[in-house]
Length: 304
Image 1 (cartoon, rainbow, N blue to C red):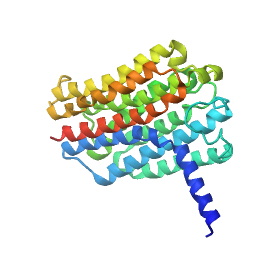
Image 2: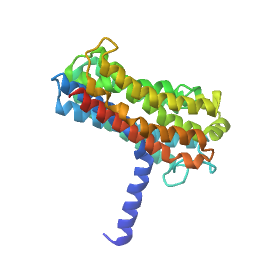
Image 3: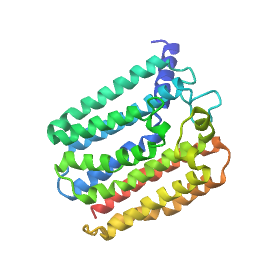
């Protein structure tokens, strides 16, 4: 293989990596960490189920990102004036139909990863899988998509929070305590935080494209306030669960995520004070790191 072919291969791999949006993948990994940590504490840890749940979650997230890349381009939401991270379809690096086929392929792989989980967990896991992929497609599918209707925040909270954490726990323990669903609120809120960074940054583009996100409807100030509430709310939730204030068994060390408060102050302040949309892009990675750290600290603390 010659040097030019090698360079082309590396370039194509990088293009698909960009399309997968690595900074958002923490939203897929974090709930699996939480659900698996809680299953471990309950003596119900199941390695194969945990790994397949992780694979399925990441593949669904990548599928969402590929579909969003394709749909925003064909619907005119991504234009030459875009200020966010590179979108490969809009940039002409991937043909729209190629991106569409890649989306179908990735969702197909997610289904394959879920077959064993369905066999183990039965119809509840089948229902979760179908709903997750259906909602992922609906997220940016046309005029009445979740994003266009301003319901994306609800989708993100539910499917990257209680559903993902609860599903991960259930395929290992084959039961579902209330405290697991409550713990899903942490990743759910922080995943909304990632979405809000995007929506605050893209508010002008979304308004022109007719996407009625909550930030478009209620303004930038609302988006900033909601972002701060999501980050602080997730940290406080860990403390409440640790104290057993929801009628659950106390796990004092599960309050470890409260130590992330200093890390959360900087992004909240930056989102509030920065008016240059491009300068907000680093907040995606910063919020994603807080999300993964929250999950790690909570999972470890739950077992101490």
